Image (cartoon, rainbow, N blue to C red; front, side, top):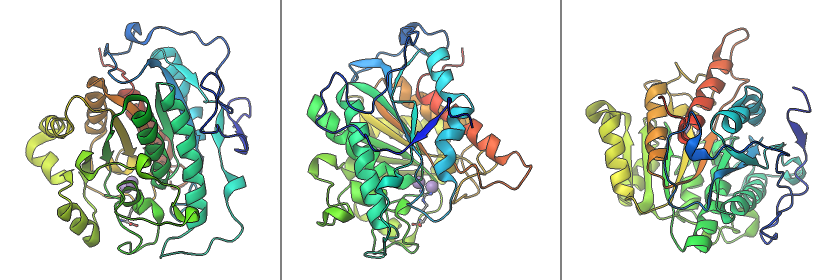
Amino acid sequence: MSPSLVSQVLDSAAPAVAAPPSKPAGIVALPNTPTKPKHFGMNTSMVESKFLSHPEELGIVAVGFSGGQCKPGVDAAPSALIESGLLTQLREELGYKLHGDDTVHLYTDLVPASDPPFRNMKNPRAVSLVTKRIAEQTYAHAKEGRLVLTLGGDHSIAIGTIGGTAKAIRERLGRDIAVIWVDAHADINTPETSGSGNIHGMPVSFLTGLAREENEEFFGWLKEDNLISTKKLVYIGLRDVDAGEKRILREHGIKAFSMFDIDRHGIGRVMEMALGHIGNDTPIHLSFDVDALDPMWAPSTGTPVRGGLTLREGDYICECVHETGSLVAVDLVEVNPSLASPNDLGAHETVRAGCSIVRCALGESLL
Ligand SMILES: NC(=[NH2+])NCCC[C@H](N)C(=O)O
Ligand SMILES: [Mn+2]
Ligand SMILES: [Mn+2]
């Protein structure tokens, strides 16, 4: 990769939460970015944003972090997505002005030398520190009224992305966000119900307060302001849910559309029901795990599960969410370009699918 394309730097200057609004540290505005107004972009659907003060501005958080699970390579996803032209497309074809896109954060300065398991969680200190930093980054963008795009990274990073937007939207608009979690997995294990100890299977339990820990070092930095309600959480695409997770979903009456529901009703009806549950007056954070797609479309991911969404169904979910005008943040996670056998096209296809998902969420229209 050419360093001019993506400068991978240590994240030593992350934006402080209290940074002045005009120019938070570490946020890079591209010089002379041509700004086509988004609503008139040739390829962009014309949707008024309900909750963004700068809907044409996109805050990019590129997270090269893999500590929420055990397979290396998912940290290389942001660079792969950027190299394949994603950010250029967002700028030139969809007309966004990008902020903070010049840096893939590796957070290596935050990873402690020793990080033994705690309450069955693997790499607990690293994941806690990194997600805390990510929360500061998404918070800074969302506080400015920008749409936030986070390129992961494994799904543990959603503790930071959602924790940051939830807080910023509460402060800016006095509203709670809803979360649409598109995934083969529910990622709602508590440290105690998890069989793997991998934190990428637990982010939703921390974000909803179902898992709690006072200690600052182990997600104790998550405060009420960072949390979301189980009533405003909707899953789409589930097909590999652990027994303990099923119990949690049932006990809390969490809205979930599995592949069964998609087969029964079709994706069109499922999206009507999912968005109906959220209501049209609620800011939405979309967290998209690429393993929601069938491995036929996205094979290069750490925990693939057969029987998933077609690429069109995934794109359609994103198009519908964009169409609401309520979108405030998007995550794309779990792309792992290194999980492809040599000289097969898996990694390329997965990156391509990821780019498509992001473009659809950000308003690319077909006609
Ligand atoms: N973000 C993901 N891909 N999560 C997969 C989680 C798999 C399993 N439920 C676990 O807790 O370990
Ligand atoms: Mn998953
Ligand atoms: Mn996931």
